[in-house]
Image (cartoon, rainbow, N blue to C red; front, side, top):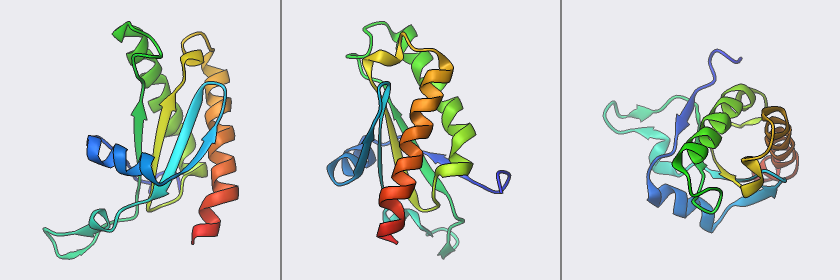
Length: 134
């Protein structure tokens, strides 16, 4: 299952704003995770005129409130990307959008602590919210 699980990255600010407006949220010490069903316009491949493959989309946000130094923000984002790559096949659902927002505590936290926090949030989102929407 891990090999055929496709993760796309959310990059447009319009998508980030849309997800943050109406989404399910779960908080931990180092991160906040938002989730929402993927918009219909991403579920259809217009060039080929058919449904696109199953996938989930993940976006990452590390603001200047976390650290003023870009080096530290980029490190936090790299860590979150690696954690998402590892945990998404287990906990993320197809046709869902996820936004992982770093909190200031992420800078001083160990990789294993961040991974545990993200895993905690993804488990609870999958258990409490996503299955109820389907």
